[in-house]
Figure 1: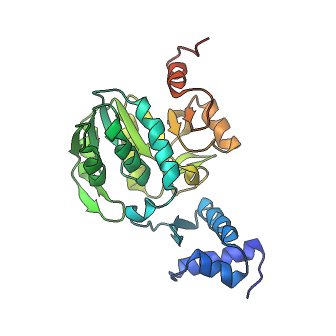
Figure 2 (figure 1 turned 45 degrees about the horizontal axis):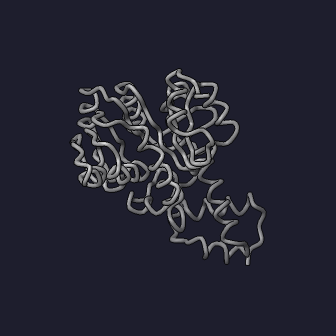
Figure 3 (figure 1 turned 60 degrees about the vertical axis):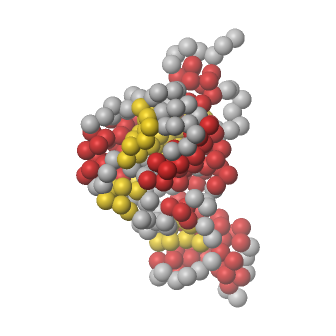
Length: 273
């Protein structure tokens, strides 16, 4: 049984994951003589430093994503909390864009109980989730299908967005860095999300706690263009300060101020007496 410092243990973990070895959290914990919670903290630290990507029960090398069906198992309760907060922010008959992602998919599922919308998306699973009792009008962008992301990708997606002006866009977050704002893993998604922000009157970013402080390879959206972030926990103080300085609205479950009042504040109406 190996007994290592935290730094040495994390280095060994990163090497194992980079080598593509099939490992589980319980196996690693037993090998190093620590608890599974310690290993989870190690993996979280490695993910925030950009060295790995966590998945349900283990991790992958940085730059490789688990299929979206697997990512749906991560932070499921938190994503459902986020979805419940997003729906009241939308109004009937709005023209909406929804990006691919496990959190935006939860929002789509929750919209079965929301107002009737017209939605454009690059994720077929979102289109299927929206085709329910609310009778949303749903369109797909076209493009090449990526199994890894469960999404349509490529120039056709960018062209479809360029032709529209959206009332609201709901955008999943890859990472939110205190120094650089929203980050992406690659240049395509960097360009995609920049284009969506350009073509939207209002943007709602959705991110569970694992994305707050996570880094990425490409700068995407600066803090001053975030507008609104819906998450499941209060952001870390340094990130919260950057968002506040940029005038962004942050919504999470434990807030004392109701969502509708937050929207009034954002429009300049101020809180009610």
